[in-house]
Length: 470
Image (cartoon, rainbow, N blue to C red; front, side, top):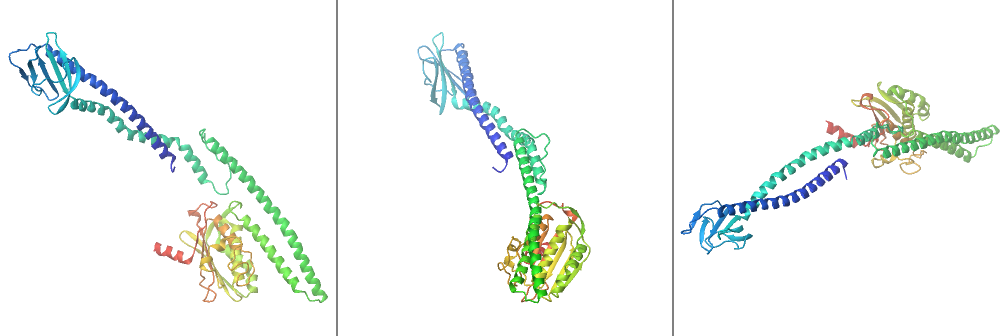
């Protein structure tokens, strides 16, 4: 059942049609019976009138009559005294008083026989087919208005049902307008009794979800403290051990260096997992404000510049000031993840560019590098949690946890942004590079914070869209 309104309309019209049909059938039968009695009384009256007319017995009198009635007047001794021009010369019907049916002149006739006081026999016949035709015309005149009234009834039922479903449409609108992070109870003005259980159940569900999310937020805060503290302590002890060996002149074993790398990787993994959880649109309490994306990108690049300098990489910021509505902390984290990935996977001495450009309907944040890039068939999977191209270790041998682009995906979803992955213009045949474009909607064309899917597309899809627009 696709529509309650259409279902009710069809059901009610079908019920009305069925009831009207049964009523019309009963009325038709009753009307036909009453018409039969009326016609019979008319025939009896004609017979009585003929019985009162004196007739000369010397020669039969032929009277011109219409096609509906035929009659004969017989004497006591069986002589035809008078007849209609459409009646035969032979007796029609039965000699006994009452009604009977007979065939003559190619038609079926209802014949009434009447014995007069003077001994004459009067027989009056009426065509059966004309009887039914006249009766049908009378009955149809009463049935046709009922049939013609069905469309009017359907229109009225459609309007009445629409009025009755107004509360359901109001509830649908309330649910549709709710943002993903809005778990406040539904507020309907005087909902009907039939909707009260649904509204109460929905509000109870929203209350349970709010309590669950609150518990998860508290858990994330507690986990951040509980996990960071022991990892930091282990890292401090490892650094102290390395410093002690260095001061004593002893050579630090390779296992100590591997331990320090593992601790750093574990700390990074914990931080990324917490960021991934925090950036989920359902959990993150976003605070949207007006942000100059170009200025923010400049600050992030300046903060991360030492990492690029250590690898002797060239980084360039392009574009101009462009303002959007967004959450500053989340957007900084998005750009940091994109730049950290670009720094890790771009070889030493490579190039990285960051561009901020305002388009007609969005602001584009573009990060290009000259690294190995991502194959076209894996560009959608890289946004899955813990997924890395080539398995746990990328062919570039750069360690990672596979959460950076998942965090970027969540932040883009929070801002209703569109992510495009493609081949970088800085790449070459051996290292094609990666170009990540995040298209953030302009404030005038979007309502921040609404839940939406992030659209992922490749360069070929983008070119097809541009060619269609052209």
